[in-house]
Amino acid sequence: MVQGWLSPMISVLQSTEGPSPEPFSGDDISWTTSVTYITAIIFGAPMGYLTDRFGRKMMTLGTTLSLIVYWQIKLFCLEPWALILARAIAGIPCSACYIVLPIYIKEISDIDLRGALGSLLILNRNIGYLASYVCADMMSVNALLWLGLMVPTVMFFVLILMPETPEFLVKQGKVDEAKAVLAWLRGVSPVDRALEAEIENVVRVEKQTKADTKSVWGIILRDKPTRKAFIITLIIKIAQQFDGYLIVLIYAGFVFSRASDSISLKLSPNKQIIMIGLVQLLGSIFATCIVEKTGRKLLLVTTSFAVGIGMLILSVWFYVTSAGIWMPGWLPVLAMCVCIFADAAGFQPISYIIITDLFTFQLRGTVSAFTNICAKLSNFVQMKWFTNLCELIGIHWTFLFFAIVCFFSTIYTIFDFPETRNKTVDEIYEKLNSRGEKDKSTAVP
Image 1 (cartoon, helix red, strand yellow):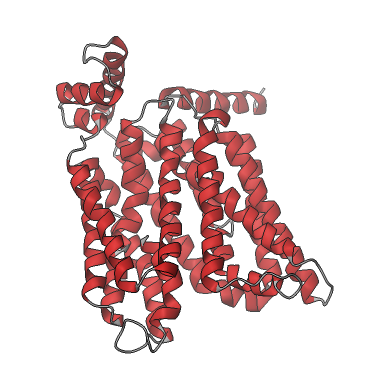
Image 2 (tube, one colour):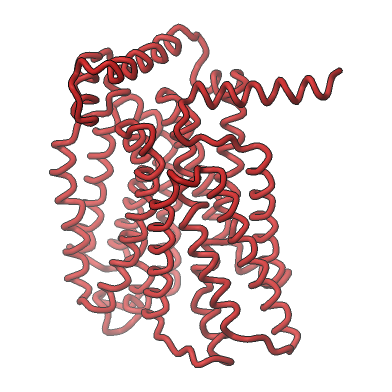
């Protein structure tokens, strides 16, 4: 809702009849939209360390508290300085939600549910987008702000009742408490054999990590399967950020206006945003329903390829129509919806799920924080220089670049990405190791 609130509100804030004593200038809007990414990078850098130091539950509560402060500032004042301050504070949850929550969810989930539950992060995010779009069209500015405040306030008190994750409790030496929490989460007795085996495995991994004299980054860079897993995660994460998804959202209004020249598609800006939010939500629901049936690899391959096809169609359509040749107006709208649906259905949720699948609980915080910084930098680069790039080489070539990124991701996933569904980290690393040994034996007779 933090991200979704701004899109329909920009025109309201710039209006003389808006909630601010004076209309927002272009410079005010520029700072309002970009400052979140700056603070997200700053606060995201230590987020992995803090999650490992103070616990998943404590950082989740801190994230929720920052959301409460964000909405309270806007209720208190909507002048430019106050909104820019609120958006700066929003950088905390905009990093933490993508670092802390996937770790918390994974560490309380059973192995055959972690994909479906992990995909709920993107599903709930898109519910928040759509709720903001619809409520902005139906409610007053003040009422929407109270609704935004209510959600994290209720969740804060609910989360107080939630347990810390068993894996973090083991890390703290609280093995008996971890066993009791895991028994409650699984709905079984604390003396259940499968539960005891799971706790013993966590304790074993913790002892191995403590015995290793290398630092966290030392393990990531020097341990062969861990290094491979890190490279795979980084490539897929950056590819997902440069698949053009953000740009399609930004240019949605432009595509609608160009398409309306040849088809009777007259939608108000708010209705266009609502339509985009609905497509996002449908994609997320689709991902949650099938991610445990198809596996991560197949879903990632098909959705990245689908986004690439959509971007290629948009590139061709803009190029051909700029040359004065007629093409049907429904084509770019369909391509845009395919991109948004496919990204929400696989590319986005899988890029977060694999971080928790590919790394032990000691490394998840560090890897999540680093990849989040890379993601926010990618977003900042696109937001800052996309318009200049389009003016330099043309929007059609820019969309073609996005298509190439998606097709590269498809090919890379087919050959290098290991299936992680229903597999432990040890099983995944064994597969990565055996693959490397096979490649070596092939190359050196």
